[in-house]
Length: 251
Image (cartoon, rainbow, N blue to C red; front, side, top):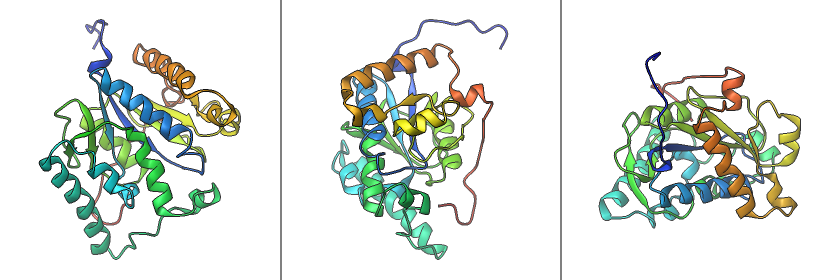
């Protein structure tokens, strides 16, 4: 690597994973819609984004299915959802025992509410491809990736698919970081103030009167800085975890 040299690049060359963990009642109101706007912006400029955490699509899957670009992509989306439900059933796990206690303490009441918040990270772009766990990205645009809701497994799968960084929203807070830059967005300003060493961006301003376009512009600037070499918080803290989807129960 000592012979590597920096070269100018375009946003269209970057691939972004979309992830959330420790979601709260503001996830679907602040940080996730902001990520959705960023996803649409990146795709409009030729870039690629990837949504995963299939169990957190349950209840909102029809929204994604309605945006598939063709019948083949629609069929692959249906198969991805149903395969994960069969996986849960095969291991005697209740499909709808979600949200978690932490989600509920943060204000989320039902799986459908959590899923509707989760899928907002995908913005309004059409779904162009669906990847199985372990597959690499093939086409630019909005992709779906089959992986569980576990933060470490999902983030590792996103990086393995070819994502250069993972954009990770959190309302309850988590120090987690993957082995690529893991950019943390706080859903609320209280978390951002309490954990500045974990959080890269405060999306809570949306409930305090800051316009979405203003926050989006600031967030784009941050992403460009990180792509140019500014360390994300997980890199500063040297939090770089890897987890593989195993046989057995991984929710």
